[in-house]
Length: 201
Image (cartoon, rainbow, N blue to C red; front, top):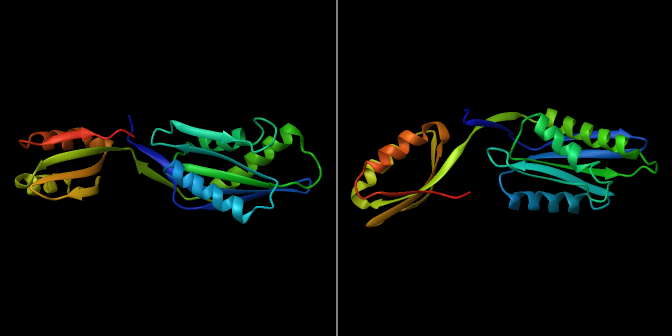
């Protein structure tokens, strides 16, 4: 099983017009639901005059957390086609918000699905797709005497240290790439008096 997944590197934009209605799509790289809330607030504030602010997102390295929202459009005509594009490009840690300025003519459900899908696809095609690693987060506690050994193991480009507490008893939080997880954890466990625990998501 691969320990990589795909996301986007930075914000991108797409636009689509249909019968005087204008659809503007914004794609963002995100990693938490808190980030999603902030981006939604920002777009709703900046484009407060838009008729709809529809969105979909997919989070988590396995893409297991996702949501689609129609914001007053007929059920399944906006959020679902947005999410469909994220899924078809096999992306995760991505939020797409599509705003609509109503042009006076109803598009019907097939027209709406096509508009939201096309605007989303344009935004995602403008984005730079990047490969990311699936990472597992751990907490490790050890004595000061073992600090050098632990630092030596964790000095690896595929490992990120998030938090460090260095005292008589030390505690680190770190993420390790799935592919090198087993050997890394084994090496840490071989140091006497070390306690290691996998973080829950």
